[in-house]
Image: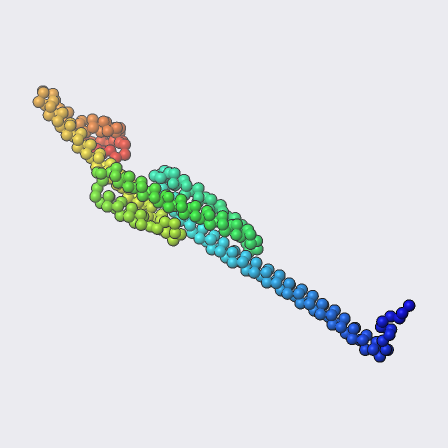
Length: 278
C-alpha cells in the first residue's frame, strides 16, 4: 500500500502546516462565534425597540382615551341640562327628548367602564371607539332635539295670532339665537340648554298671551250678546236680568264652577285655564 500523501512531505513542512491549519480553524470558529453574538445582540435590540414602540403607542392611545372621557363628561353635563329644560311637565318634543335621554344614558354607561394605567393597548383602542361612537350619537340627538324645538316654536307662533307684539318679538329673538348655533361641533353644546329654555319659555308666553286675548274677546262678546238680549227683552216687556246675572250665565257657559259669593259685585269661580275670571 502506498504511503499517505502527507507522509511524503518532509518533517519540516509538516511542522509548518499544522500550526497554520490550527490558526485558520481557530479564526473560523471565532468568526462564527462573533457573528452569532452580533446577530443575537441585534435581534435583542430590535425586540427591545419594538416593545418600547408598542408601549409608546399604548400610552399615546391611553392619553387620547382620557381626553375623550373628559370630553364625554362635559357633554353629559350639557345634555343633562337640555333634558332639564322640560322641567316637571312633559316635553313638547317627546320623541326627540326620549332619544336624547337614551343616548345620554348609553354614553354614561360607557364612561363608567373601568380604566387604569395598565389597560392593554387593544382594550384601550376598543374603548376609544365605543366612547367616540356614543359621543357622536348623543351630539346627533341633541341637534335633532334642537331642530324639533325650533319647529315647535314656529308652529306655536303660527297658531297664536292674538298674542301681543312683545311676546312675539321675544319668541322671534329666541328662535334666531338658537337657530344660528352650529351643529355637530362639541363646542356648540355649551350654553345650548339656556337657549332651548329661552325658546320654550317664550313659546309658552306667546300661547298664554294668545289664550288671554281670546278669552277677553269671548268675554266681551258674551257681554255684547247679553246686552242685546236685555234690550230685546226690555222692548218686549220682559224684565232684563241685572249685570251680575249676565256675567254669571257667561261664566257658566265658559265651563266655570261657582264657588262662593264674596260680595254683591264679586264672586269666586273655578275656571279652565285661559278663561277670564270675574
